[in-house]
Image (tube, one colour):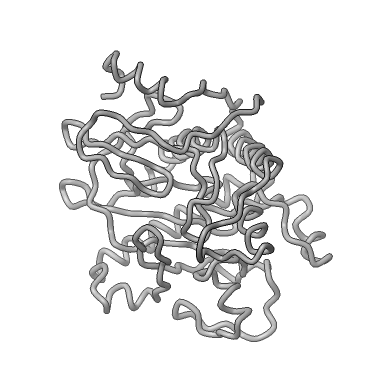
Length: 315
């Protein structure tokens, strides 16, 4: 894989530009949006690096999952006209992120391990006993919602009861969301296990379509939104007190945490070796989960998209 700079910025002459941590989107006709996934990498709610090919992995892997899980819940995916581009149906996003966790782990302020290790025993409305070690499996997956923080701010943990009582989502719809999230997670664990991986946790985002029906949006089961661990050496590494071998961005979080960074102030610069290893992990996650070859897109991505737009291929 050639050494190159990741794509951290994309701009197209299209209406209603919306810039997120990793994606930028534009309005298209007929209640659709154009989503472009950049190579930006966020950790602790901050942009900390740009990782070559990361955006392509996220976009194509999410598209693969969207196509294969429509039997569980509808989603916004329409087409993927470019390795970094998804055309999706317009949605009104729900104001909470939906994290499903199957393992006692994590390093961010909203993770159950971080809170547990600091002494909390009631987390997201669930009660935990003393004596749980990091990275051990939970008896069953749990839904742990958070607020959606503005750029530069931190998400706030919520219990499922608080999602309803504080007016984020009405009760009947929230029950639908929880059922869909747990079923998606179960499917994700099954597919991951077939690839020799353990899906430890993941984040989902849901919205309502123009008819008011629930649908999955954003991304799903990617190395950005999930933790994927190697099953072959999981038990041995845990027994030895080591972190699981992961195919996601957790090593970036752990590296930053080891440097004393947890999201406050400017992040430290990550070395080229760390960036290259992250690219390798993301591509490996894609090929393992999909059983497909990763065909690298050309750079610069901006020039590629400009040509597609000029030819009318991004609509």
